[in-house]
Amino acid sequence: MGVLERDIKFVAGVGEVRAKILDKEVGVRTVGDLLMRFPHRYIDRSRQLRLSEVDETMESTYIQLRCRAVGMSYVGEGSRRRFVVEVNDTTGVAELLWFHGIKWIEKRIEIGREYIIFGRPSLFRGRVSLVHPEIETIEQFLSRKHESGFQAIYPSTERLSEAIAMRAMQRIVQSAWELVNNDLTAFADPLPDELRRRNGLMGLRDAIYNIHFPRSAEELRQAQYRLKYDELLGVQLTIQARRTERHRSEGFVFGRVGEAFNTFYHEKLPFPLTGAQKRVIREIRGDMVSGKQMNRLLQGDVGSGKTMVAFMSMLLAVDNGYQACIMAPTEILAR
Image (cartoon, rainbow, N blue to C red):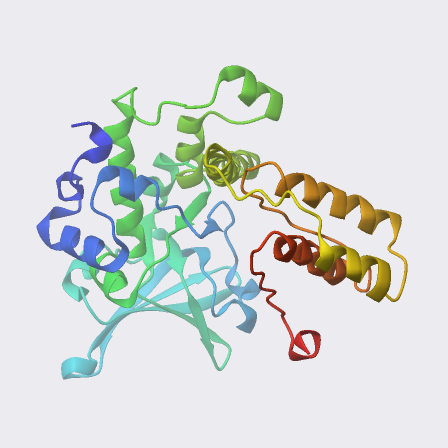
């Protein structure tokens, strides 16, 4: 079994319980499933805001602050009890609030120390507050400066979000990639080197890495381009395979141009056909006598005569003893 087929429960940070939730909620069972489940957006964590820059338009987005802890307290009783840390920078004051995991977070806070704070802000009477933000010391932040400033956000469900927080999901994906990084056979590129060079495509392994951990906006763009190319190529190859299969099978031969077509064309048609209409009817006629299945898209402006071409093609089927059916998109056209 290759690393991509390995059960997700063996990835660091997952385990039995989270593995079952990942399977039930988003269909992730293996390492490969996880790494092929791409982020749906990214947050630029290279930028730090001042408190004076935070306004109401940012309440549904994530922001990053650099502030100093200046006070802490407990507020409320029972289930409404919360831990509040007051922080400031040179431009303002904010509150950080935790309702769960209070003892754990309290041990990490030191009055007078600076922290990098990441979360969604809310404003009440001009004061900024963040509920359950991520928080790390300046030293921790600087130690991972080499990492991408882009933080991937993965599509989730309510239950999955409760079981695996955003940051935890990112660590799980990182652990999965570390497993893959030690296996050079994983994500071997199926496209020839010449095809990649001709189309300016990033290698598959690099594309998978950069879709999860982009080091720059340009590398993210290249990764997205490569993966979109693969997806569209797969669609085109599937269509071509089906077309090839159709052409292997024998179809009905409509070899006769008979009374139905000739009577309509010479006696009933109220206007002469255009050159384009005649050309397309000849092409369709060629398909009908080939003995192979026809699959066509007839494209033209409104009023250019597509329905007439379809109707006259139907008459060729009738002349050869077959039935024909037209599907009309509107009741007016059907009538």
